[in-house]
Length: 105
Image (cartoon, rainbow, N blue to C red):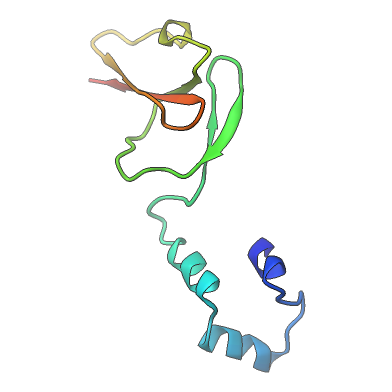
């Protein structure tokens, strides 16, 4: 809806206008539909586990599923305790202010 409004698509369309939009979608709509594959979101909401600071970032293809995220002002020692038998791996600079953490077996 936000993109439709941004590109001047009215909030109500006739059936003919709707069919035309679906038959010949503008490039932004084609990309938006392509992004809805269920693979990875276009934007992801990152929230620091320690202080709750948050920001949005475009996820990178190399990102694993993070167990925790923390901002630059905190150390991994401030995160929940590491489970026995696991190793903590830190991915630096996943955004302007955040690190990602994966606790591996």
